[in-house]
Amino acid sequence: MTHNSHSLIDRINHHYSELTANSRRLADYLLLNPEKILIMSTNEIAEVCSVSKTSVSRFIRRLGYADHLSLRNELLQVRESGEPVLTKSLENCDFHQEIQALELLREQINSTDLGPLIDSLANAPRIKIIGYRNSYPLAMHFRQQLMQCRGNVELLPLPGQTIGEDLAAIEDTDFVIVIGIRRRVSHFSNMLEQLQGNKTLLITDQSGQKYAPSASHLLICHMNNETPLDSYSVPMSLISHLVNNTYQALKGNATKVSSKISVNYSKLNELE
Image (tube, rainbow, N blue to C red; front, side):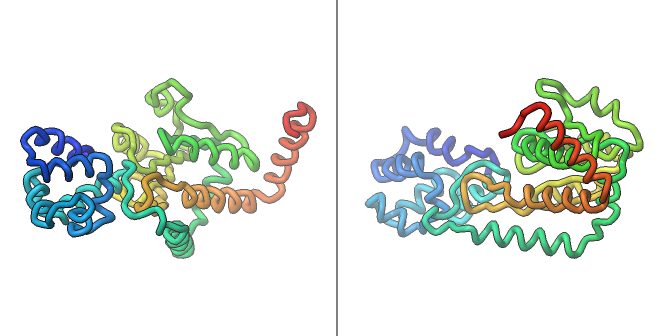
């Protein structure tokens, strides 16, 4: 079985001209609703398409899958990688999965000595934050929050630029934060390997735990796989927790920085 993220659609299109009338009804239905493989049983799919359960099983085997379960598992792997796939009816989706993920984050934080990490966030001469794709807004938010309590926080790379020059400019005393949630860029592992001589924090989802040996600190944000698009409430909550602890560690120095920023807002008339 292939692991192409569009394997089901590709296989249906490849075999479409050879399909019987019953199989084409199934093909047409699943081309429009591939997520139904995850939500519905074989019997339910057969009923909706007005075919027999045997026809559904035969159709799935014709596509090259052993059975309904193997096809379902492939789609779950696709969702795990970060591609939008509806894995259950949205009518039954609430905040249960996010609350559960936040509970996992709390357990992780309670069982981790964050002291050395907070010390680096507070006292490193410079902090570099790297985030691509959907991790870029997280990196930008992390920088903006840290700037409320300390200086010398940079976001890498600059828009439109590659990372090579910036990695070469990182010094031994810098602290580097790398955020890689889901569908990471192809050079992600190479970038982490190049940073192994530096103190680093890696914030990633459950699929990024394999990079643990490459980072000084690793924090996992468990992502919800039941909705087609990801919620970033967990990594945002983690960032808030880290920054507030950094602010507290810096005490009066953080207050001075945030007060100076507020004065500048007022002088420049930047806010309402």
